[in-house]
Image (cartoon, rainbow, N blue to C red):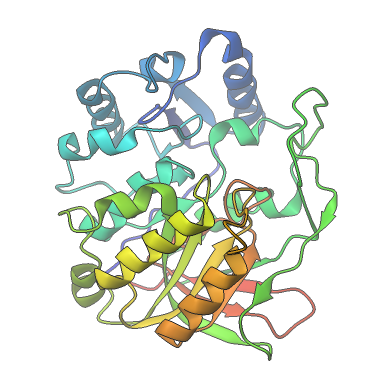
Length: 338
């Protein structure tokens, strides 16, 4: 069974850094993001780790875990959004309190996606893969990013629909800020290994493959148990995005996940756009996708709105999704089924 939190206007957002915090020279970004949230009707509470960063993390693992655990138990906090991702979130997993987690949203991506993935696998609490707090600092938002509020405000048993973006950002231009943060210039085109348009249905699960692959074979990556006990053996639609892996390393990671049984009873896999998908000796990401589709005998979608090449949809781990590629713009309908 999957449990869904519900977001309401006026909610209080807890800001903690379970991975990387914000160094002193970038404090203004975090302050601005909090100010924008307050302008939208939310309260923000920034904890200590949000303001610290040293040796590839905001603080020692036990400190980060304790702060996150405290925010989970704090009844005044309705939603947790880290400032951004990082490198070493995996260090805190053994110190997290997964017992009787309250129903509150955790939103983010990149390294934070490992936290989301593990929470949903171990507890059945839905988590939201979407923008980190720093990405929400604009005076306005593109329609894809802005959908985070509608998704998190969806009630149990209800459905929320998102359409593919019209444009995406080819590269960051930090020296040229825009009101919506991103520079959306390139036409979005979702692609598929299948010749004909298709529909996929299944429970959503996924994140940044760079980090979630590291819990294969651990107590934090028991996908089979999740599928059996939490979603009653419904098929999974995976969404994955590649931040920094070469195409060869991407392939190795996917084979490892396959050998671990993660793709058993899988309806399909969606891959986000990636700037890391550079060929290795002529071996391309498209080669990886075609090989995986042939091995698993499921459709593979790619260049979707997910991950480090914005904008991105808000995907809810555990929700039942129907992905429809038959129309003019791909659409994802998520239903918050138990």
